[in-house]
Length: 538
Image 1 (tube, rainbow, N blue to C red):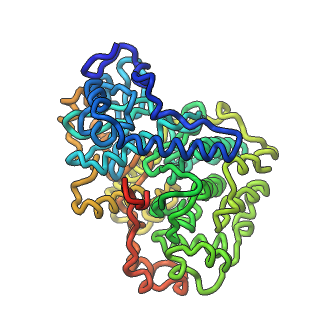
Image 2 (cartoon, rainbow, N blue to C red):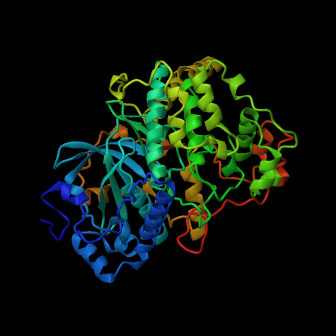
Image 3 (cartoon, rainbow, N blue to C red):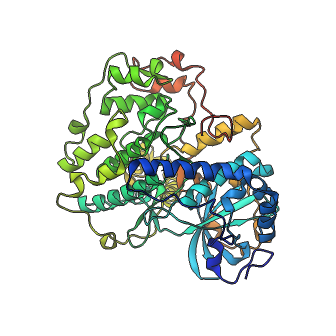
């Protein structure tokens, strides 16, 4: 049934282990006993991560015969163990729907099933082993997860020669950021409850399987034509266990959705980081826009403390966070979430107050959030199938549309001065968040010592793709490269990077001059993003 070149008659066989005796990629079952569940998750973590190193040459040889390139099996064999690669020429690219720091996303047709899918392309310059390992972790994470509110990895395409991978996903018509940014769309309370309930169900599954997403935001929450929400883009995800055996990096989560403990340099954390981001999403759904759009880490912390209050003195002493002495405000801030959002429903405010707790412990779990009165009071969450049908829209499309409109106004309105500028600011509520993956890319670059040693999808060769079997022929106007897109993470080129801790001018523009001195932040380096050995942050 399986041919040497990787083609196979039965498409479903590509996702079924061809080595029945191998249980290295077994999912960790969810136990009702909390202690037993932690033990199972920890054992699964160790098995899944360490077995990559222990794979025999015979197993790698079997993978190469099955169609996987040797550059992939040598470094990340465990990630694709038991799978057979899909062939590139069995897909037709239809449109480019996303562009990111180190990946591109395409709408495509599976020619064998006629199904519309999304292909996430990641290209590795010089087939760098560290970048390959990083992508392998995303694949391993995705293979562990299986839930209606989490995107499912349906297969992988790998090029033997070009050093690129395509991850195959179900195609989703919308993302939450795109819907929020679309003029004329305002969600009802029942619809907001529906989306939040699905998000929390997805997070509960991830956390039960020992996975932290670490980049929850609107553009990573995809929605299909039937109203089903699915968590996407696990590029920054990691495994966690209790007690934590290895430090984690604090340089994750897109800035506007990043919790205060990460901004303060925490390397020991858990599910609370995802729950903070979920709280930001809840407020954004009611407010219609991001609630804390900081430009730098300093400004972001200032916005958090102004809204949520500053941590207690006991927390500062107990946590011993790396940046606590630098960023601790001189005067305590009073919490004002309820006053700021007094127009929100009271049940929503109660849940928001929990999720946006400035200290991580009170945020609870996704399970406790689902048990909130917010989901029990009328109006109850609507059924996903009853949600309105919107034209296909993603944040990428919204930003491209707005950029195109701005260009047309610039050409036709040069003589109208500030009038067109004022009008353009009112015509769209689209706001793009900085990209957490940009920080990750910069750290890997620094670690490797040269800029061309990472996966760079923006420099892909169209002819090479055609040669590897893709019918290339999307409309010319779909080559949108004004905005970068990683998985489902927008990174507009006109936003300053949040990774520069030597803030200089940026700090002077941030509100609250008594909050922190620019001089104090000089010399703070970003922590390492990815390291496969030696107990470094991951």
